[in-house]
Image 1 (tube, one colour):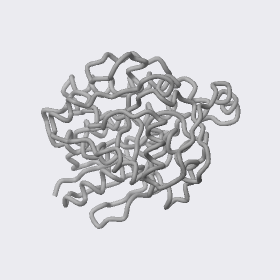
Image 2 (image 1 turned 45 degrees about the vertical axis):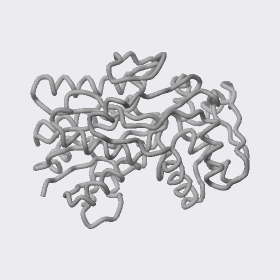
Image 3 (image 1 turned 90 degrees about the vertical axis):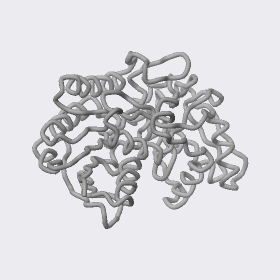
Length: 328
């Protein structure tokens, strides 16, 4: 039975582990605290994935190594490089294909829909970090030393996800109150379902013709934050959605006290202008159809209600923030 090693048990890591285990694959899930979903096919191990020696030991014999983790948002510059290096070393030593969960930061601010062919022109520190992680791994792939690919999505929807929308808007909406978010409420925005991220990671890992390049997760048509909030209220049978734009100065003020809010300042372009992902390449290559946004929203709402709707407003900054602390 092939061994699959997953680093991180956040929403994406957990979804990927369940998907593989349900297929009868052997899954080893690594987190700092040994957390993760309970499943007879999932072996949960407490390990620091940035420790290359430990990661190499746990990856021995694996066919695939999935990075579904990420440091705390305000620690990307310091914590990502050693984690990325350890992943590359483990992939080289074990021979496992390294498939990394990425995002859209490295493209920087662009006009029009983002495709995988776009050059990497990051306009933020976090974008520079993501760009280097991919270019380092790709250089090793091109040199024949590892096999790798990156799977990129936009802001997540699904169980346990933590993004500006799920933190700042959804809990207030479910409580019948007004949410506030630092965004253009009517700009089209892509929302990626975590289950589709998992399906794409597994499909890419299994297809050697898919390696050596990035892939965008099959993602439903974009919706503005206002439209997403309106539909969420309808599905939740909550009062009519009320959402307001948080002024830029309010975010800057919050950043004086909250490191995540402070980090959000440099990626405001993602919420203040159209932010659209083109995923047609992966849809064609793997036959994965995006999960309808209604389905993704229902799961997000149910998860929020199970957790009491506790998404601390102002503690989330930027796309894919839910792959951060809890995934380690």
